[in-house]
Amino acid sequence: MDKVVFDIDGVVIDILSMILDIYNERFNENYKCKDIKEWDLSDLSRSKEEISDLFYDAYKTSEDKLKYYTGGVDLLKKHQKDDIFFITARDKEYNYYTRRSIDFVLKDNSLKIDYSLCNSKTKYDDFEDIYRECITYYEDSPYIFKRLYKINKKGFLVRHNYNKHLWSEFPTIDVCNEEDSCFNHSKEGYICTSNQMKGYLDGR
Image (cartoon, rainbow, N blue to C red):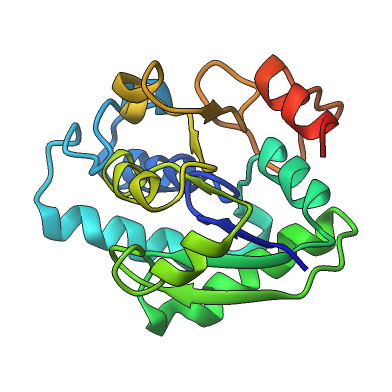
């Protein structure tokens, strides 16, 4: 089988929406995804430690509050016969919650996929061989994607406000169908609005 690599947060899981839900409730703010311009969430007037805590809390989000990108599910469906690797920057100690989230997304969309879960902050240092061998990969981090693209030019940068400065430089793909990039699994009637994405998927 061909290898395909997915990042999780920002590609399948709508971690930003979940973080902002927690942040807005905790600090009485009203941030939306479209307000976030920096990948490290430095837009938020909080310390790095506080922002890290928001990520950790979001990882533990219960299934009834889990948000994911239906466009990301479209990609999983197209690659369900491939050898799927989820390579995430999440710490290994959270793998119970990570698997729970992935398994929920798969179950919620009637997908039966055997996958490998790998953890790495940089990805290119620890799993260069996988990225070099895969037929494609999906990544949202502007910093990590640039390094991965030097290894394998068959990847797609998943479009978000925080990587907008790279859209004209690299192949991109949308997983969102709302302007503010936020929606949850209960939204019905999803229609892929990205012509580039539809063209790619139709060609698979």
